[in-house]
Length: 121
Image (cartoon, rainbow, N blue to C red; front, side, top):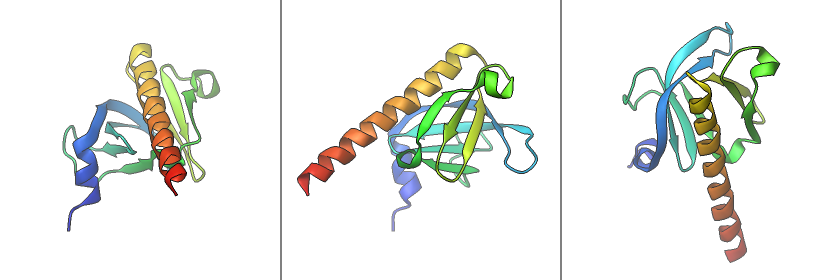
């Protein structure tokens, strides 16, 4: 049987290092993030695509936006899902904007594909 994550990782749209705020201790940890057409993954090591520390289905994301003022930390953005809010930090503003744009674009494409499939029913 094919591993769905490995299949999904054939469609990488963007990848790179971001800092992520941990859920429990609220400390910031460096993670390798990988955006595919349907999912945002985080891993502990660069290009080591096993045992993701997070799997965020883009279909569950309600918003992605800058949150520098909200948490008083430069180059940060947040991803809201019904179950959790993820706080991420890029190394600079250009990288932050690139991640927000890439995730937003993937979300739009996913919604367009879903709406076309719904029309077929």
